[in-house]
Image 1 (cartoon, helix red, strand yellow):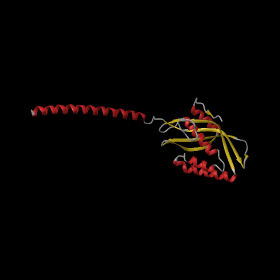
Image 2 (image 1 turned 90 degrees about the vertical axis):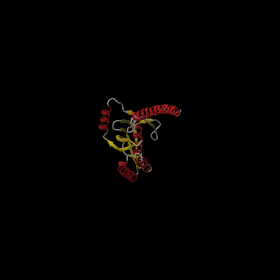
Image 3 (image 1 turned 120 degrees about the horizontal axis):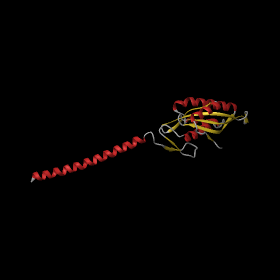
Image 4 (image 1 turned 90 degrees about the horizontal axis):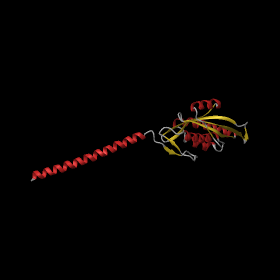
Amino acid sequence: MDFERHQNDLRVQRKANRTLGAIVALLSLCQLLSLGVIAGMVGSERTIIVPPNIDKTFWVTRDKASTEYLEQMAGFMTWLVLDVSPSTIDWKRNVLLNYVAPDRHAAMKTQMDLEADRLRSNNASTSFLIQQLTANDKDQSVLVIGRLRRQINGSDVGEPETRAYQTQFEYTGGRVHVRTFKEVPYGQASQAHQTRLGAADPRPVVR
């Protein structure tokens, strides 16, 4: 009697073990499928974000931002750098420095401090009317073309001039960083940028 009961217990135990084994196998399969999905998403996930002072949303990946995002950010950076007066240069400099890449922070701060001293000593101001934005998503840069107006003591210094500026970005750590903002020769920069973009049309800015 004890032997038969023992055999029944063994059969029940074996059945329970088979059931548990099937459950473990199913869970392992689900885990492998989840890992496969996650691995496929790494590097391809797009996050929708809104840059400052912009009413559109754009995508960014782990290390790249869309051309639309770059253009809007370049317009914002251009406003911070070129639309300045003795009364606005300090706070615009501080806002800009929040976006500068850490390894470029000191150089950019020195550059803007010198510009602030120049504006105050001459009681000067500049304003920039953007006419064209052309982004290159491969190197994450934007060419900005527009009309620069300069004033001293409230009077214009010559006629507004067509100028070109290039902003170099990098997107890391979930945010965009400015690496450089510099003036480039207008004709040469425009031609080179169009060559890289091929058939892509620059985006005019309507004001």
